[in-house]
Length: 117
Image (cartoon, rainbow, N blue to C red; front, side, top):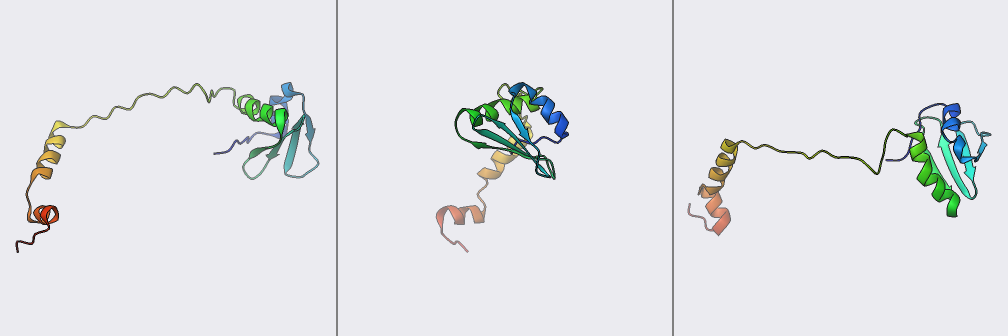
């Protein structure tokens, strides 16, 4: 899943204002934000997709800071996952064990390869 921003261009500019980069909005559906040698492309429609280009510190800075500025409420590194506990009925376990212990003709044939028909 890639990074997306579905708000307005003005909202995106506000969220990234602390980076002191330079915007280029000369293209109809694409807004470009530059810091040093790093470039962020934002495609307003159809889905607000964001991608990064460039080399060196500018690209690294954009890739590391932009997600947290766009989604400050979400901490991607500090996600707390609750353990999932699965409760299996003891009757279900007994039925499964009993089914695997049956010596049906088919099971014997598959296990030994001998046709006793």
